[in-house]
Amino acid sequence: MSLRALGPLSYTTGIVLVAIMTGLTTVATVVIAIPFPWGGYLNFGDVLVMLSGMVLGPVGGLFAGGVGSAMADIALGYHMFAPVTLVSKGTEGLVVGYFSLKSSTPSRLTKWDLLGIVLGACAMLTGYFVAEVFLLGIEPAVAELVLVNSIQVTVGGTFTAAFGPRIRSLVTDSLHGPPEEDMPDSSQ
Image 1 (spheres, helix red, strand yellow):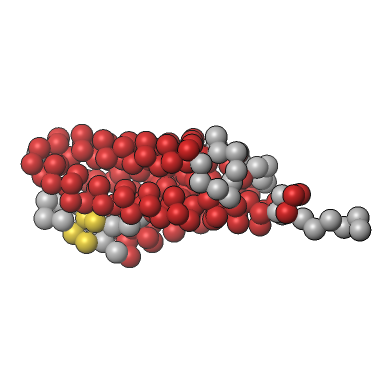
Image 2: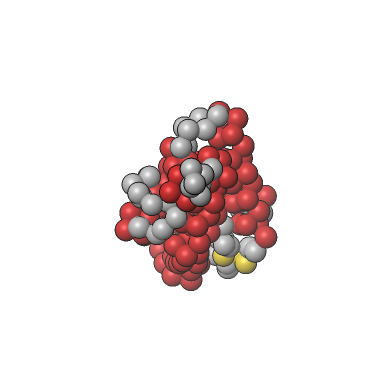
């Protein structure tokens, strides 16, 4: 499996990492789910959606973000939102992951990481807003955009910007060992 953000991996390791992040995304979404009067709910799954993109790259972010979040919708009884969630959150993870690949320093937040977080948030907000206009009407869609979805992506983006590069670096190092410049010189 190609999760280029993490370097070369075995197929099994790639599947396991995506499965773990998918499950964590579902759990993070379900654990704190505050219902909204018009049909949606406030949750903090966007932390894991964006983190999945930053750590796993676009393919892992797409799958973990989309499938993990859609499974949470189904588990919580929000079936009508699951297809919208699959596309919107999947796109969010994909975009964050795509720009994360351009980051040359895994342990540091770069302009590419920030651009990915901002554009991923915009993709999620746009996807939900357009779908909710058709499903709920313009007023509930605007209310959910302002009172729910914007909070979710702000929390997710802030957490990912603050902790994502370090987590990405830790995962990469645990799979491949630390970069050579971090290794002690054994020639002495």
